[in-house]
Image (cartoon, rainbow, N blue to C red; front, side, top):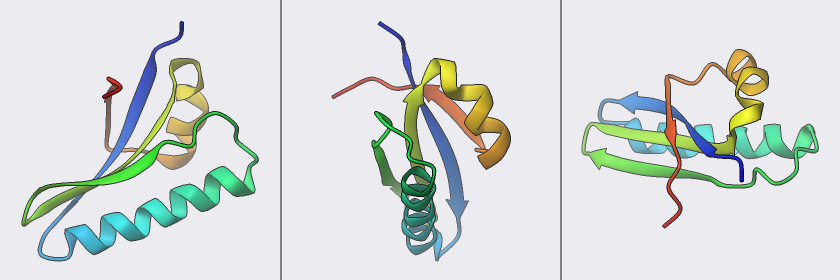
Amino acid sequence: MERKIKLIWDFRGPASLPTARHHEIHLKEFIKNNNIQNTEITGVETLNDMHSLAFWVIPESAIPTYRDVLKPHRATVYAEE
């Protein structure tokens, strides 16, 4: 089974949470507009009052395609909860 990778966009400052939520909207639009299947996991996490992030989970084989287009700040292996 192929590993899943969590692409991450970090946002910092007092408006980090609303900015991360807004970025997730754009991620969902990108997925829908490009008819991308089996990569519907997106979300927002708050690390503290000044740091939130938006993320998108994709198969490892899709990294070059989406990394180069969307330019995430970082990535990590996704561990399903």
